[in-house]
Image 1 (cartoon, rainbow, N blue to C red):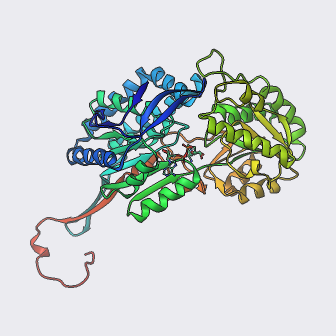
Image 2: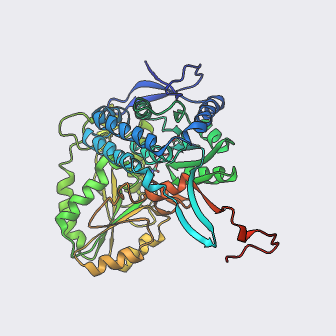
Image 3: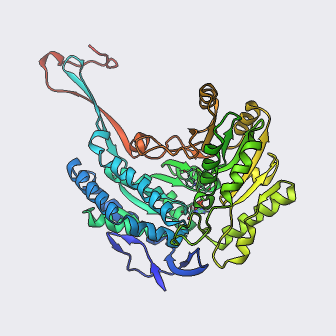
Length: 495
Ligand code: NAD
């Protein structure tokens, strides 16, 4: 059986591994590999290596850093399909979707290639006579990233390319459910010329995460995952004096006003609800129809949904693959059962597929006449289950979103510019789409939600990523000038 171990000092960890976890092929339901689950000592080994590497990496010139980043970018482009195949095999997403994931990660690497421009400080000459003040951005030191199963290549790339470009060294703890892409990309970075220890990958579970959160030599932690763990990571990491950005779960609403282009809205909601089998933090899981919009929209949604091809990710024409594990499939099926029991109308039932296949499949599932008290509305299901809530007015739609504890993404579909503008202005959500169902910002903006979808002040990538991975230092300098000689015990004032 294939064994996946940690990546430390630009090579596979060769120490003894006492605990292993199973890695499945979600399309067949079979175990295909085993992944090392780190002990506290193994995390310490990776951190010690990163700390030693930081001594020199922090002073690596900007030209050297960018040269390595450009080379890394080229290697990703050349190996895009290899990375995508790893994602299909361990996560289960279809190949075209996996290629899209690699592309979106690559765009962050390209952003990081511009690091000389991004870390420029500021300078004022003569803040006082012959005194200059300037600010510089310096790396934090050893920093860590803890990432979820649903984007095993892209979410780590939201973090380490920028952190490393800023002069930090990085410990990545990817999801233990689909660990291979992290090692493969770290190997590519090594081939690009990254010195030993600048990027170490430690695999594991809560044991590894807890050590990272309390390790005295780690200065900052980025986390992406579910809300309860994001809250825990934020509270534990900050209590240990670390800078923490922790992105959590989501329940994203798509509001359709009666004047919307219904074909556009139907295409959008089917793509956004069932793409990646709903295992996206920006997936649409609630469709809110206003007035008579549902009468026009629902037949078009059903028509499209029936044509979605559910199949293993490498099969020709596959549009939706399996869920990541049997446990997760059973949880999603449990929510469909609960929706039926609560009295929602089950328009399309994906449960049959879960019984017919050995892989972890659930078919596209659509509920209508869902009410906000139902578990299928309240909880993040993270599967191919779309709940439709019918409301009479725009105000009722807005009230649903305002009352929801999550606030990652949201979308409105309308042809009324005034309504769209009012919506973008008043909706309390971090990322807003206007006739765009999954408004994931490009690499040069920043990604993050509000409320229970983000703990901490910093969002991922873009300038907020650069700020998170650097500390500002402000220098006030005077070079000898005879006019300024003499003791002055007063508080410094500008002259
Ligand atoms: P998860 O919270 O179970 O796991 C995330 C990471 O935390 C993994 O590396 C895991 O090993 C670790 N972890 C799990 N349980 C832990 C514990 N008890 N203590 C310490 N560490 C623990 O999330 P997941 O199931 O891998 O990913 C799906 C979740 O991630 C969804 O809720 C989804 O919305 C969210 N997500 C959010 C975003 C975002 O940008 N907001 C992006 C992607 C995914």
